[in-house]
Image 1 (cartoon, rainbow, N blue to C red):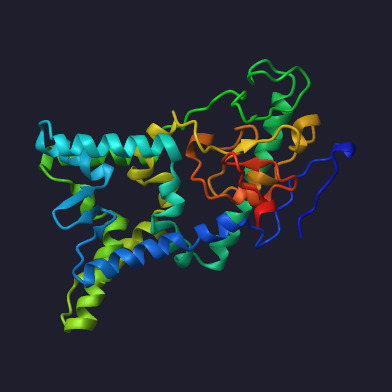
Image 2 (tube, rainbow, N blue to C red; image 1 turned 90 degrees about the horizontal axis):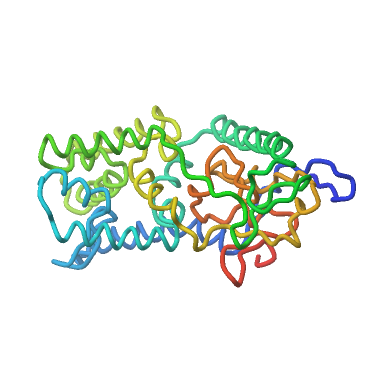
Length: 330
């Protein structure tokens, strides 16, 4: 049960939101990656030639993933019109919906949750709560400073719907190192090297190998090697999506300039409007973001539009569109 306080008492509101408290959109979102994965695999095994997330399309019309397109440019060492067009379309999509691919389409986050044991899930939950405590400290330090947009002295920082809070850019981290290594290796070897170990591609390759075993009795080492690589990446390289994924890094570079569909705060509803240091949304965010004041461990540019902050907000103050995406829509 989530503990809450009223603005009048001035106490901190930072308890963990209730388990299972999600908006309709947030609940649907949990099933979409599996549905997309299943439809693409069905298309492959039935001969529809729909491709995979690494190269989706129909028959001869296909678009490789943005990272693969960028790697092909570096590998070819020359201008490739098709790759440039793919990158332009992908950049436009990220400018519109940010990193929504990570929570709405990519099969890796659900697979990572499946491979996580109880101890790891509890550790992740504790890490989110600890990150929310960091937000509390930043709220206290930021109160009264002159660096938070239009915030007046003495007010708690609040990211209003018109973006009044100071915009933060995503930090350079291990993902960008992997991204750089992917491009350098592609330039040296002449082909997209990272695609050989990309967990997204290996997930589809494993499904295809399993189908060939069951449907045609064709055993192959792929059915052993590919899952082992995936498990190693997601268990030994903890927090793959946050620390190592070059696709996330590439989208994050563009998402820094995204303005549409970011979490928007209704200043009349948010408990911070009068100084209450509420951090429920920050504790609920799997990306360690503070949507209300952009004071989290990671910048708001990293938002994947999963909707968990809106579902957890005790004041129904968070929305992503004009119609809103709040717990009240459950």
